[in-house]
Image (cartoon, rainbow, N blue to C red):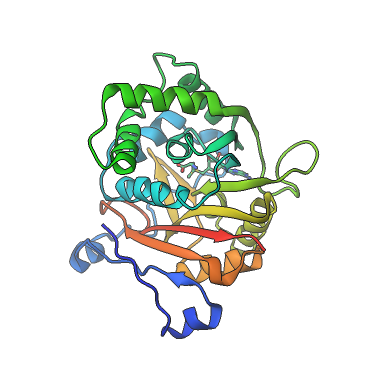
Length: 293
Ligand SMILES: C[S@@+](CC[C@H](N)C(=O)[O-])C[C@H]1O[C@@H](n2cnc3c(N)ncnc32)[C@H](O)[C@@H]1O
């Protein structure tokens, strides 16, 4: 559940000229206070990305359509309405997931997908190749289609969208947000770049986060769309018993990050949603879109 409005009177928003959707904390403040681990963890943070287990991650974050995931699905359905047909799209740091691409499949001509970890790409390949061990994204496909169509979708609708998405994904490869450019091969750019929980979830260093934002945004063509989600108020996040680093951000930080990465201030739109369970080491999610200068 989230709330959206334009804040033209807010001093920060009017200075920067972006549209912010303030968080509506659905969890009671006592529930938030009760999380003595909120924002910190009793376990040491993992230093080695090889400890990121794709299946554990998928199970922990994508096995339901509670508040966080419902907000993500709605955000993508709404945001893809604003992109031109036949766009080229890159999902940067997509991890083992394909949920952000479900709503794009019928609008774009081609999707490229990259992540830092080969194990995550292997998990996505399982889904592309319809292997038995692949994660089941059908609840997300169904939720996306239901919003798009304005009616419950049929099994046939779901199968058709999955087929379309598999066809659209034409390249899978490695990326590294620390590099300029962050993709291998000659410099290229896209009409739309989507990057979810990557830049702020790959470091706990704010300056490095800014560099990651800049490098990822460099892949958006001038006038193209940058769609980015980030954890709000996080110090870390868990993947099973492993704790990964994160940068502690709010909407202002994210807006400045987008501006310094070359996005037009007046084009920035941010939605916020609160974390849907007290066990999370973050306050919520921020879902943003912006146009590249
Ligand atoms: C929290 S996961 C997000 C995955 C997915 N986008 C999602 O929405 O759930 C963070 C991702 O950042 C990737 N990552 C870590 N270091 C990176 C780097 N230097 N460059 C690009 N991606 C990186 C990890 O492999 C992982 O897939």
